[in-house]
Length: 278
Image: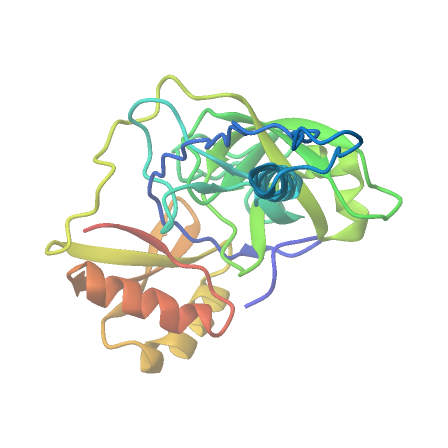
């Protein structure tokens, strides 16, 4: 199994979805420093004890507000309304590494059943609804830092831990990813899909699930992945072909607990599995 980047004809993809609502919390400082109070004796301008305590509390609260403002949370996104279920923590991954794919997949169907065309500005993401447009901005300190490209999500992947998006060759060229192979990026949703198939945002703990753990243009590469992971998880692992694309599927797995355990086992060897109902 080879990573998805320059001149590789196989990809690894994973799906795990879920939704998280985050509430912004605002701290309100209801205290202000008090200059002091007077004892009434001539020349005595010392602050009274209550003033000192209030002043100290004010400084403490101000410091807490400052620290909260300085925290930089990991970028995540939550779609409006019903859409595809996000990741296991309830949100879509928006910061990580980007790679690109294309050779071997030209003219073949993507996970959305749209035909892959490397000249279009498209991408694969594990959880964002098909049709969502995201801006991919290169981060870090390399020569590509600051470059951006807008892409439309029409496929699922990547399947390698640490990577969050696979770009088409043309999209990769616009940010220098075709030369680098892998780059750190941050994603921003430009527009949410209005046609994503509505599904339940909660996963039923008792139903059957399957894990998609790889997508390949070559049957032999898919077969090698199946042989590698089959001894690691207690379920059937098979290669399924559709229009020249080979997907490695594990399952069915009985219940969400068993499916999540299998997914964690695969994460230990760098494979990000995409969980979906059977």
